Amino acid sequence: MGNPALSFVAIELLTGLATAAVLFLVSCGLSLIFGVTRIVNFAHGSFYMLGAYIAYSLVSRAGGPVGFWGGLLLASAAVGLIGVAMEVFVLRRLYGGPELFPLLATFGVVLVVEDAVLAIWGPQDLLGPRAPGLKGAIEVFGHRFPSYELFLIALGVGVAGGLWLLVHRTRWGTLVRAATQDWEMVGALGVRQATLFTGVFFVGAFLAGLGGAVQLPLEAADHQMDLSIIIEAFVVVVVGGMGSIAGAFLASVIIGELQTFGILVFPKLTLVLIFVVMAVVLVIRPQGLLGRPQPEAGMNRAVEVGTGAGFQVPAVLLYTLCALVLAVPLVSGNYGRVVLTEVATLSLFAASLYFMMGPGGLVSFGHAAYFGLGAYGVALLVAKLGWGMAAALAAAGVLAGVGALVFGWFCVRLSGVYFAMLTLAFAQMVWAAAVQWDALTGGDNGVLGVWPAPWAGNKLVFCYLALGLCGGCVALLRRVLRAPFGYTLRAGRDSALRCDAIGIDVRRHQWLAFSLAGLFAGISGGLYALSKGGVFPTVMSVSRSIDAIVMVLLGGLETMAGSPVGAAVFTGLREQIGSLTDYWRAVVGAIIIALVIAFPRGIVGFIGARAARLAQGGR
Image (cartoon, rainbow, N blue to C red):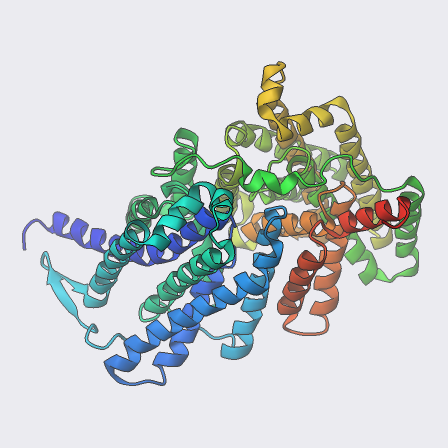
């Protein structure tokens, strides 16, 4: 038997390795796709979920070992082909443009897949059959350990070895490694980039599908598994190093063991432990444990096209639109006023993200943290301390601004996807605090009883209050971008080296932009809490941050006017389609994909380009 404590530790180590094996299957495919295409693929979690559901359909109908294992492989291959279809019919149309728009397209795919799974397999969780021949357990260090988890460990090691041979001992692997360093040069040397990208997507999607398929005998397939796995996979890829298979393997082991032992040693930190690790790694070694520094292109190129003051909405059109918006509450009922209030608050939220994302080139995956800080700030001050509405809103903005000031100091030292992932890490820490700090935040029950002042209790009055306050804040942000600070921010985005050469402190300007964006996001969050009468941890979830990115990109990066337009379109689609069908996500996702393909510069950017052509005589 030996030492019981050592035996227990050994069993937990093996459990962590089994978890790491599945995580590696998903994350290595994600790392491979990003390394070659530079696409942050949010649909990768959907591939994992499809692998589990398709495998369930195949193995539950087939009997015996051949049917079971064949079903897992067929499900993985089917997911690989779905990944190829996404690359060929959606992403290939977006290559060569701003690199954030493929990210937006993959978000649309996530929505479509989520409702497709709901329509085909229903809302219930589905647990697959036990693996033939691996249903029992074997004795390890005096304890019984499941045979299937040992198989997963062996599978993870085998896939890692196979990928190493594929990447380092084949011509295809040589091209992949070359494309990871400079895919444009690979294309210039005569390699068909489209074929290479398609092959990479097949392998990456196949591995994600395999990860979902082999997980089926252990955990039921459910509709939330795509979001949970994609977040963990991003953590693994960033900690290991973007594009590094060996880094993904090492990081998977670290994260898998952290998840296993963390719940025993730090039960109160289980939701945030891996993000703390990611934040520490990024601060100390920005390129990850085994990664190489990425080219500055990456996500920064997403904001080089048409950003800045190139297109300005004509004043007459702007004033006309404002007058029409102000007239809507008078002719609509309470439902219309509530929706317009939400559009106003989300417009400010999106505009605050644009403030740092467009002119600053700072793409945040965690902007909802400051929206949530503002919402919770107002909720706690109004509901628990009895503050007035105006004072609570001001304090909420300060609270969110201070949070952004602290987190931004670390974040602006990174760039591209590493900056984005560090913002996500800090946002997840704040979200975990909201979930687990029951005494202050109420946990999942949230904070209720958050209402406007009596004079603003009428929905018509509060709607005009939201429109006026949010419109004023957006105008102030727009004015700042037209000031010397805004032009300096653009200069730092376009050429940091030249700015340094003439004495401009780029990081300080980016830090200030990050902090101001957080402050205004906090004000919008505070208004949102007052409009809803309460606040829950979902206000600072990852999906809320992605919503903000979607709104900014839908409107376009040409001008700040795109953010309110994107917020109105996104909210309007969700509200109107949601009232017509239960599968509103699929419809919204399909519309987002169509808009991205049809208007790669965003809605306002497209209108601006058309107006410029008309002004030049229709050329």
